[in-house]
Every structure is written in C-alpha cells, then in structure tokens.
Length: 113
Length: 108
Image 1 (cartoon, rainbow over the protein chains, first blue to last red):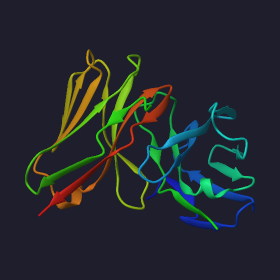
Image 2 (image 1 turned 45 degrees about the vertical axis):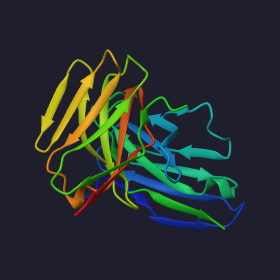
Image 3 (image 1 turned 90 degrees about the vertical axis):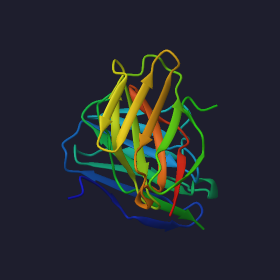
Image 4 (image 1 turned 30 degrees about the vertical axis):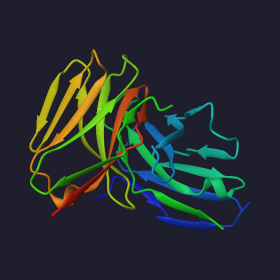
C-alpha cells in the first residue's frame, strides 16, 4: 500500500493561474518535504515541515508556499506559475531530519501552458 | 556546483556488474543513500550506509564508503534490464541533498 500519496499524478495549469499540489502520508512521520525536480537534474529541496515548524530554503522563490494543516497532509501552493516552474514535484516524509530513510511519493508532474 | 556529484550516464551489458560512483562534500553527513528512480515515478530507497561504516551488502547491492576521499559507490551485481533507471546518491546533513543522478542503461 502506498504510504506517501501525491495527487494528482499529472497537473496542467495555465500560466499565472494558482495551483495546489497535494501530499498525504500514512506513516505518522514528523517531517514532510517538498522537492522540485527538473528534467535530468537532482531533486531540489524547496522547504520542509518538522511538525508545524516550517523551514524554507533560502533560494526557494516567494511564488512557492506550503501548508500543513495536520500530520497527514501537506500542500504545495504555486501562486503564479511560470513556464520555468514546469517540473516534477516530489513529496517525501521521514521520522526526523537526518533520518535513516525518507519515503517518497510518486510525484506530480506539473505542466504550465 | 552540486554538493553531491555523479557521472550522468553508465551503460552495461545484462549480467555484468554496474558500479555507480558519487562524491560528496560535507564530512558531517550522517547517512548516505542510494535512490532509484524509474521513468515517471518517485524515488525509491535502495540502500543507505551510516557514516561510520565502510561497506554494506544487501543481496545484489554493495555500497562502499571512503570517508577520507568522500567517495561513495554502488555496485549492482548481475545487472538486469529491470535495473535500468536513474540512480541518485544523497547525503543527509539535516536535510537530504541529491546528486544529479546517473542514468543506467542495461543492454541485453
């Protein structure tokens, strides 16, 4: 059974139209991460939550926001998607930071038209 | 540049061994990981090694860690076509930092 679930798998949005990507977990892990992965590149950490504490990476654009209303769910909001935001977005969870294992969802591939 | 570096491509014949190499920069990394990503999918943890270990073996997978040179390798024995994927090396220094990935192609 999937433990980290991302919806939808594929998302098409219009240039400038806000879009929300969803991640849920059944592991009761404390930490949830959002990564952006562009073609042939390493996943790039955007931000993570440790419980309710939000940690933003210094170079994450302001256009990207996140919400974690409870332990199980975490959302990635892109306020005004540009063509350069087209990518695979990966959600991951771990029991703690520097943990032995991070569990990844299948990812959401975002296309901006 | 990347904190974690990998060669981008590796091609082997089915049945041969594959060796994927990685260098990292942060000597305080607690854990080092190998993830596998198949087309259109998320990342799947293959194996990890704690920083005080030199080697870890798990069935067809062997991980070697040289802390002095900050070098990590993944050896896949008897490589199969189903092993074709992108392999990411990652270090954990509070959060996880990935290399750009090595695309392994296995030819019949």
